[in-house]
Length: 158
Length: 465
Ligand code: SF4
Ligand SMILES: [Cu+2]
Image 1 (cartoon, rainbow over the protein chains, first blue to last red):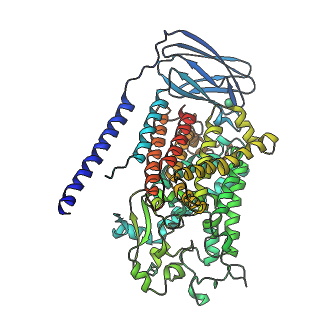
Image 2: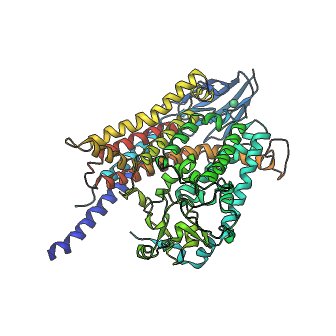
Image 3: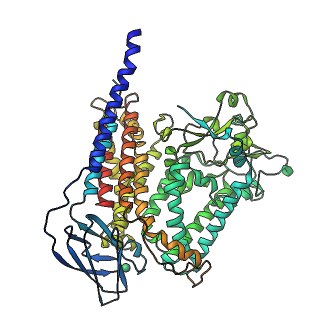
C-alpha cells in the first residue's frame, strides 16, 4: 500500500508528461514542416472575372505559385471592386468597363477576394477565392485537428 | 478547484458595489442604443454607411463575441441598456431600490406592485421557465439574418422591438423576465458564459442557510432582490446569473464573491443540465456553420436566396436552415451518443447522455463563432471610422474621419488566427467530452469527439479552404 502510493504518482506523472511532449512535438512538426507548394513552371495567366451584385464569376480562381497573373475585372451592373486579401491589392471596375490587375502570385495559399466598393445590401458578403497552389494552411489545420481530437481521446491516467 | 476571489481586493469591491460605474457604462450603452435606432430609422439605407449596422453588427458584435463573452461571460448583461427602462419603472427609481414610501422595498415574490396602477407583477409562467423561447427567437431571427445584418431600418426596428418587449414584460412580470426567458441574445450569452474564467458565487453556503431573510433574493435598502430571479446560494453555473452585481450589494454578510476560476468550469458540472440548453448549443453551432457558408462563402446564389425573404427559394433556405440546426445536427449527435454507449441501454439514458454530451459543443460553438467573426469583423471594422463622423450618412464630418477609406485589417493573419481558434476549440471540446464521458454511465467519448472533429474540419474548409 505504502509502496504503491509512493511510486504511482510519479509513474503517472511521467506518462502524462511524455504524452504531452509527444503531442507538442507533433504539433510543432505539423505547424513548421516544410511542405512542397507545387513544382509547376511559372506561366502567365489571364483570368477574366465578372462582377455583378453580389457575386464574382467565376468565384474561385486557381493559379500556381510564381505565376504572373492578370485579372480582367468587368462589372455587369454597378461599380464593383476587388480587394485581394493577403496580397492587399485593389482594383475598381466601372459598369461595362474592364479593369486590369497584374501581379505575381508569390505567396501561396488560398486567399479571399472581396468587393471593395459599396455596391448594395449584400456588398460586404461579395466574396471569391484565389487559390495559389496547395492550401497548406488548411492541411496543417486538419492535421492539428487530429492532434486536438487525440488530446481528448488520450487517457492520461494509468 | 482553485478559485481566486477578486472581491477581496477592496478597490474591485468598491467599483462593483458602487452603483455609479455600472450606471455610467449602461447610460453610455443606452445612448448608443438610441442613436443606433435613430440612425437606422432616419439615416441612409446603405448599411455600411449607417451607424446602426456598423455599430451593432460589427463593433458591438466584435466586442461581444471576441471579448465580453469569452472573458466575462455575461459581462454584456452587466451593462446592457435594454432592460433599463423596465427596471426604472419596476423599481420606481433610476439608481438603487425603491424608496420606502410604499412602506416596503422588498421584492417579495408575488407581492410586487406593477408600474401599472392596481396591477400586481406576476411570476413568469412555469411552462416557459426555460430557454425554449430564446431558442425559438434566435432561430427565427437567424432566418432573416441576411436582411437584418444589412438593412439599417430592419436593424432599428428589431432593436426597438427588443426595447418594447423588455419594458412590456417588466410591466407584467417580476424582475428581468425578458432577460432571463425572452432575449435571444441573452440565451446564447448564458450558454457560452459557462466557459468564462469568472463567476459570481457565494463564499460559504452555511451562512446562507442560516440567513433566513435571504435579502439577496428579496432585496433590501441596499439593492434589488436578484433581478434574474436566482438565489445565489443555489448557483452552480453561470447560465442564469446575469452578473448584475445586486447580490454583492444586498448581502449583509459579505458572503458573495466574484471569482477567477478555471475556464469552462461549468461544463463538467453534471447538475442542472437541460435539454433546452443542449438545443441552444446545436442552434448556435449550426448557425455559425450556416453563416460561414452563406455570408463568407463564394456562392452568390446562396446569399441572394437568404436575402430574398418571402420568395419560394428563401422558404426552401429557411426550411433547410431549420432542418440543419434542429434536425440534422442534433439527430446525428443523438445517434453518435447512442453508438458511444454500447448496447443494452434504455432510451431514457441515451437522452440523458445526449443532453450531457451536448455541453462539449459549447467551446466548439464559441470557437466557431469567434472564427467566423474574426474574418467578418477585421474585414469590415474600418467602416467604423466614417460612420463615427457621419452616423446617419448625411454628409457630416464630426471627427474628420468621414472619408477614411475601407481597408480590411490583418488580412494575412486572420486565416491563421481562425485556424488556431478552431483547433483550440476542438481540443477544448474533446477534453470536455472525455470528462463528461467519465461520468457514471457516460459511455465512450470517441463518437462525440469524432463529431466535433468533422464540424471543425467543415468550418476550416468554409473559412480558410
Ligand atoms: S443575503 Fe447573503 S447570506 Fe443571505 S442568503 Fe443571500 S447570499 Fe446568503
Ligand atoms: Cu460589389
